[in-house]
Image (cartoon, rainbow, N blue to C red; front, side):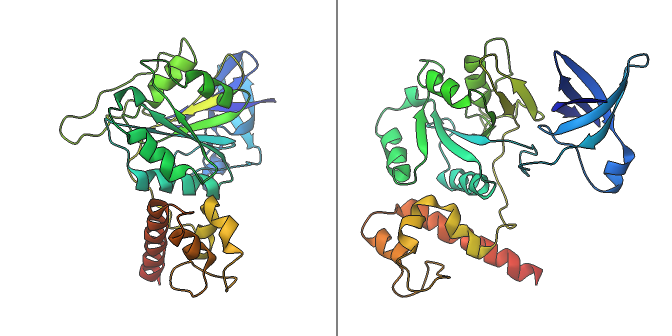
Length: 293
């Protein structure tokens, strides 16, 4: 029996890194019967027949983390990548990805790519939104090699996922970070002004300087309805410093009196965009609950 990590899965075949080799395997039928799907990032035990070159995944080790989108396991941190322009940043989607990542207890970094296109105060506006969140915002440009050194430092010796919409330059950044990857990059669609999907599946890539990174397909929308309404506020880290001042322990920071978070919002300690997105997400979660029941 061998042990390794799944680095890619395509069409029911799973490619497992063990030592210096990668083995093509299929999963035992019992996983399908139990509705368990092996994921990129899973540590597994597998058998391999050297004569037939056929491998079978026998056991999936316990997962520390399981993400829904992209579907990967055992990730330690997320690098949330958005472009400054082309496409314009969708702050609501960015906050939704941050909420998802917080829910999964991932360490978080925000990467704002294409800062070479800034012809005004676009970057400053984004830095202002996130200045009190505790998230590091890394300005980046693959054309001018801005931020690449810092991205390498962040990725070293960790299992990381790059998350964000298509067209923001995730694959371009990875090509800069690790020579020889030659990941496909794409242009924006001229009709819808969104990135064309150039990454077709999630894949775990080994970094020469230490660590792994998941190159995953981009996306433009996410559901967070699996999060409970009373959990959401805890996924906005800047709220934590003020929630102890709330009159009610179960405060939703909406209509309650003597709310520490709303007072901090009025005094400018919490960004209005972030709070507005919190309210929108909370309403989405409540609407989904009402539809179910």
